[in-house]
Image (tube, rainbow, N blue to C red; front, side, top):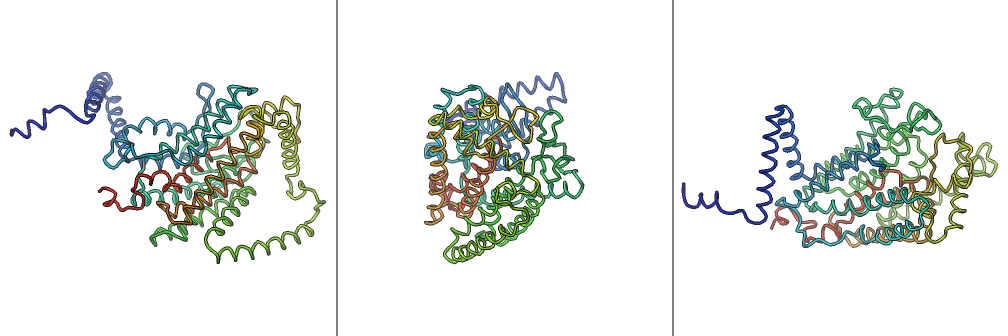
Length: 491
């Protein structure tokens, strides 16, 4: 054995290798003992450990698993905290983070800066903390506050582990184009088979409220509308619409032809899945997404859009006058759902009263439900259990955190929209396709937030994921690697 080889084998570990050596000794000894006690458990443990370290070295796989989990809101409760699959994967991602940062191609920690989403959400987080002081239910508002931090702070930081190189963008493009297709097809199968879904066959049950109160359920056996793993059609519709922006952006601006064909196929399947949900809110979100993406596409698209909007206004105005049975009220515009519309008006009236009594800091984020029942309000459609929300994210925030909270949250949305528009306009984004897609996603979210209470959904995970990818020039690309080839970035 040569001197060089002996030196290489026996020299003291450097650059933090002692920690890796200690970890290897502890894990190796533990697996050895486990194998002696139970050979089967030892083999399973070694396999699981190998999978863990493989995943730590391939964070793109974690991104794929996480994105797919957003459409599986199976929920359990742990120590009073509601948790779902995405929460579990996020915890796993946090555990893997130190190992991911030891990759050869990991970004340099010292060159990071705070993600745009994090510093933009800080005023809202502070407003949530202030509202916590006078919260009427401390535990409920604390749980919702932790959700805000999880969505808007933890996830953007975890996403900074990725370096925006071409192979990463290709992986993200394929994942975000194909994964929604599975759940769209699942919804179509659900409708075609009368309720048998692919996710159900895989053992993924839709979330169903406890008890037998069918009026509060939105699963296929009650509503007849596709819901896939979401159970409710509205959840599937929002998921499909918010990811359609990725397909539209790739269809118009993908750098490679095969990605454009993939985007066209993805868009067609997602539109079919959206039709199967029969979601009015989904249609509104899709229209907002398409309108905003057309507005920022260029002057020709804007002229066409202006003409289309004018024609649409004329047709809508004439259609209302000819609408059968319309008595001039809002409720009569929704055939068969008048009670639901009237109930929303009742709920919004209670929001107004709560705001008048607590204008500055509200009653604590997530506490509108308790305030609603404390005021003795009634609804036309009985819920069957003590749960209600404002059916409007902005109003829910207003009731929970007052003017301070709503103002800071709207400011957050405006800051992000302005930054995305600037990146798209001056071409400084690390990946303009994803910046364009993020603009559409934000528009769809803004509309969904007006017709549903998204603080109960995984949609904020999806929103933050797509916005983070769109803001790479401001965040990850601060490393100076944005847009570079794999070889250039390595240098």
